[in-house]
Image (cartoon, rainbow, N blue to C red; front, side, top):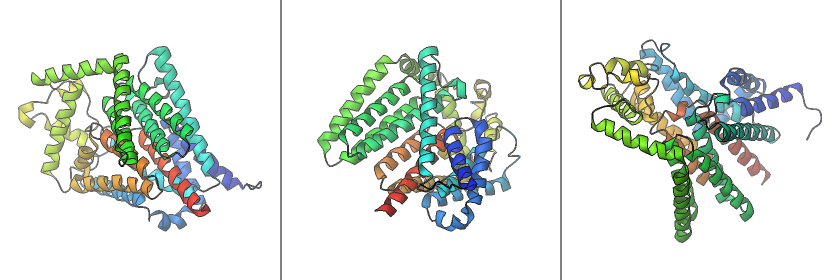
Length: 397
């Protein structure tokens, strides 16, 4: 390692650590993300852009963001409302982040990401055990974001466990994954928990699909552990009772519940996409569309829902993007998922890629997962680090 590191190199390493360590706080992102762009430009990122764009994942990001920009042309006052649509453009940070990584900078990024994740995790565990709270209020993280973070950690741990050549390390990583899933059982994110379990089982199946007996053993073990965790979690049992109550309200024609609200949002969203399949209603319009449409849609069946919860998104990645920019946007989202998987497959991490991408897709069925505050950034950083690691391992071989 050279001893005479330039000031520019020190700045780049500092920025990489800041991004990986500080993205858990949105206030830090207002500083770290612009600095990331500046560092990329100073490092000659524009000259390497042609090489970076060859990655299918980068192409998918650029396509989706371009369509969203074009969607502003037929949008009505996109600046009104909570402007959640702007979070799609956070995907663009992957380009400078991945481009800046090399063999010397990679340990700094890994160190920053691991330190940040473990720090937030320990704070979350402490607040759960000592205060019995959901999420992590200290860093402004909701229970959904905390549950998503736990799920990502569990999927990554299992992915590396199944690829590890060391039996002891594999067992250790499985223990870490089980511990994260145990904590996830005590958070209120039902679908995120289910997405984690399905992603874990998918990776096990892909790893042992030839050794079917071994896979069945893992399947039974996961189901037994999940049943024990569910029985021991008052939070999980309370959520099951809530689902039952939501269903009873729906049978009475009352949609003022977590489940009813989502069903109403999906109903109105699909209706809107059917009205304008080729263009959607324009970037930034969907949240206002719901509030205006429910006054007359189905004789005002959902007109009282704004009193139950303020509209911010459609609780489904496909419907949300389709509302903004129609079927072309939904196809671009499909391309994004495919490109994301290809990023892992090209790095010889196909099993982990299948697990993470399936987790993203499943989580996006009941929430706008792509515009979650922190989880997409975490996934982008993990993707960039693993792609860089493989790139330099390949050169070494």
